[in-house]
Image (cartoon, rainbow, N blue to C red; front, top):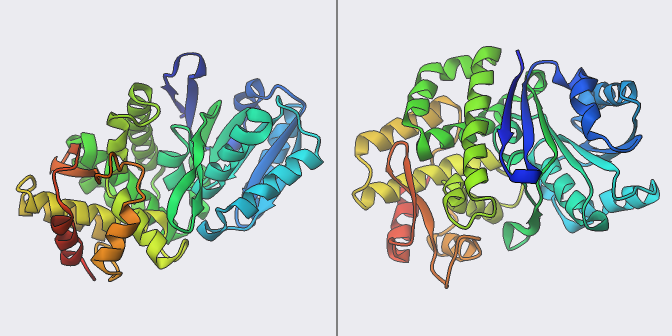
Length: 361
């Protein structure tokens, strides 16, 4: 059965539909398409799997689909690739009321959303996430961006979609590594604000890895509900929303340092979360048992829990580009317990460096 959640942002509120077979339901998409033409931005991996299904659905809704097929991978999240979307929009004579539909994972959602925010100063945008990570995190909340050689997601805009359509059937074709990467973000929600959900994940991780639809539906719905509540309270990340970045400041440094695409985003977040847990323990906020529970769950999910040896000084240099830096001070998301995250600048760089080195592979 389909579940529907709502991201409460006043006039810009939008639904998140979660269920199986939603990609083929024109009744869900039709009301959000103002024109008889829509641009579908996807990539070379997803297009052969789901583009025809979406095209057929749009046709039944009386809408012609204009596909834009991009190369697949984090390394293509650049100005050059973004410009290919603009070329297609201009070449198809798209208007401000033409809808842009992002069909794919987080990279496609981020680039499609950023293109929609920029084209003619804003066009309607729909998210159709096809990876677990995108369904539970990047498709919700309106963060859109591309990468820069000096930092991940440093160039972008807040731009909310009109609709998020999370079809759980698309997870059937997801490689195991990508499924695990998505679980990193799912585990994050339990760590930052929902200890009971963390316990549920400990008890149901095997079902998630087996792609049990009921378990996936519950995990996606809980994750989206948590994120929707945070976004509604703090859309532009001036306070509480920063908690959603647990593990991300360290993780983004890993992605930047290794080169975009070498590690998947969720893999870097997993290792980054264990650095954050290590630092939290060193501050006396987290028990050794809690750190072990966190590590065990990530290991069971098939995720890395040790960071690459890039040099603590280099980690800190990349982290200084983080969007949570204020007045030159590095603010981190740390844990005062499982289910209790805080944003703090209490740790000095020596303590941060020691925690990084303690978690080296």
